[in-house]
Length: 573
Image 1: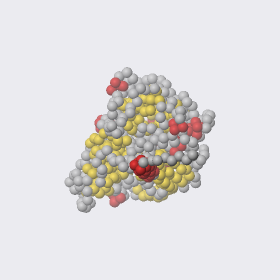
Image 2: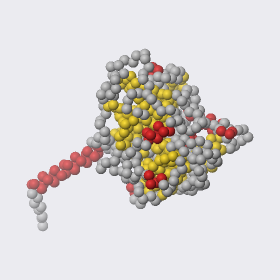
Image 3: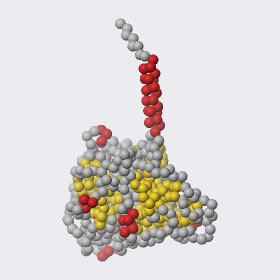
Image 4: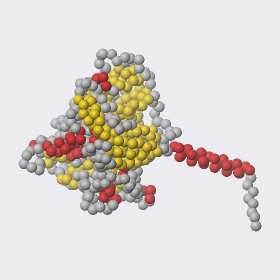
């Protein structure tokens, strides 16, 4: 028996229309998310700065390295080929790497390094990132010259939550050693037990600037048209110092930090720590002239040596020729002005709206208190070290000075390799004391210890600065996550009183936060990204001395909440 289905023409047309729109939508979605392929060749190249020529590590011969550009929702595939004489890994600072710690980069934490002559393909899936983040080496001290900007534009069809700028200008703040081979600095410091060599200059986009010898002609220049707005994408790639930054006679509007939008606020200066990135609007509304863009250190550690020089670029209004007179210098706070740093960072708030909800964890499952310290240790031989009191510098979190294993922790965790790490990192300081008092003890102990977090647990982490040896502003970066900065203050954290002052309405969301000297910072996040994730100070000498620890976040219950399988080209150990 034959059946015939009589469908009215109107219904046929309706179905055809639906199919057409579904096809268009599918085509749009496929076109929307793109995969960007890049090749990064690590190689040495000679550069001349401060009247001296030396070889440095670079990506593709560029310093700073190439700028990556993509849209939210895109993917990047970066083939890293190591043509240098040193091991290398790369980290995509601010990218969450959801379920994919294999591409996160810190050596001996999520991978073993890429050896000379070998290669490794990193994969970056941009999910929630939007704004300015950056990439850098995460092995030894290579990031001093191996780094670059990473710009994530709003998803195609979306727009900025601020007036569209006329032009964007990446500004990478860096550091330069005149004669030192940067890759040998930590080894030399380890032999003596003293501080690493101090840099000779700061740089803006690779150039020291107008105030240094042999540098004036190459000073980085920004040409603007009066009346227009510009988006400055500012990154602190400096190894060892927070920086104050300003532009003479110009007010800056901060709109984002660490690839996350902030409630807009105006300021005459920035305080930006190593590891942080900021999106700043500049309105070229001053008298047509040329003005200095300048940065110099904010150093809160009493007695610590640091580079006291000032790097400059020149903001030049179109139509004005650079004459022989020196451009106007901006006001920058004094080196140790903690009040200026605090005044700036206290303005951070999330850009909360119906389209941008702020989901601060309220019910907390896991509470952690981490005391971060610079320590001293006895020398291992009869010869005194060059640190204070003839001892050697060290640093710690909860009295544990982190030691890199010989096999990366992620591989050991995923493949159940024993003896690589221990799961007994203390969740609170082993000994309670007056963290910000005077004449505190110095000792610490070595270890490769981690904290294991259950998937989807709500975590509050209080980072407590200490006055062991000397207090300092510590920029703490958590890989694989962003977090809400719900509170901060000076002195010892008071578990009973301080949470009453938390901001649970619109706290800033960040990936790198400065813990004030002799103070504390409280952050909250949901552990919903399974993997092995490094937490560390982004002042390189502190990280080298051991101010690092690791979170292992367990897999969730579904396939989409578990770590992806390791790639076939994962570097061997």
